[in-house]
Image (cartoon, rainbow over all chains, first blue to last red; front, side, top):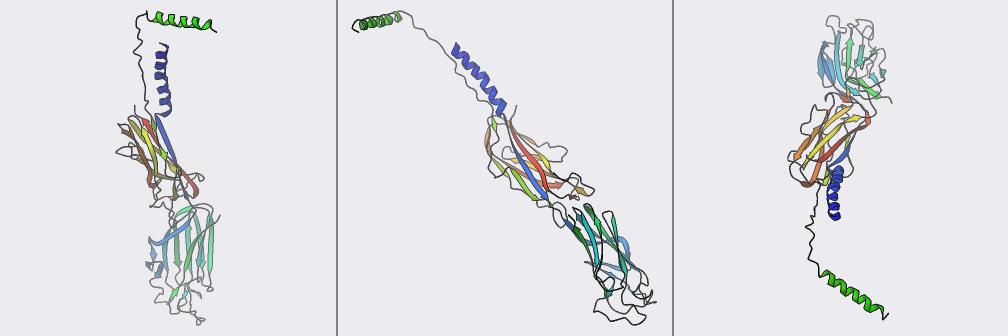
Length: 196
Length: 183
């Protein structure tokens, strides 16, 4: 009778203890990843309805349609807005740089323009990005590299808006001076520089 | 010594004689019982570390979530349940650990789907960020032993894939697989 009682007790208690520990089992895994800091500027695109006297965007080039007013032989007004999808995931500096500080003949470095003629065209570049705005006056006073920049203290994403504006009659001489014949151009660079 | 030995022999003979005089007695049957409790073990991870390493989440040219993210699956070898069982998978999304504020246009969350296959006909699956996960628990009506393959995939940016992810070297999430005896 003592032996039987012992067996019954074992049958009652051992399974109960085992079930409390092992009737479920769990495996856990961590999932690890990272996002490095990065700044990126996408390809340019035209802002709809923001183009006057430009032919549009061809790759990364914008071309003025009628650069000279045929009646005055001076500069025609023109404007265009181009946007760039961009992101910068940490504090950074937006820098805009012009290679020529204005539209200058591209074929070769010209000599001094004859008296009364202009041989360069100034323009303005206005940039909006991450609640900041920036203006670069490419005044065509001297053919040189010119730049302007603004610090953005946090991350930014969205469109960089670049608006180029040429005033009517604007030349590097007096207003409404006729322009020397030629192909004029400039190169603009937009840079997002991480500032850690 | 000569006097003690005959006395001992006489006592032993007398004892045998007394037993022979009683009727035969049987004790029993004595029941012998056993019990196999319903048990489950989740097996052993045979796939290296206990972490899914997804790597860099973003395309460096756009800042957007990469669309080719993957991580090698984990295999839980030798899992078993000695009775009808349920397998359940749950997960938490990848969250930026150091960058707690995501301004407009940014997100600090990456959702994914975790699946546990090999135990049931339909793998258990759980998608972080989903309103509900009806397939997270699957039932197996018979005892079973085998391997469970745990995978993650179908990554998406919390708030929408048009959002950029904030920079952080530590995005952490988790996946949990539970085998339990079905009641």
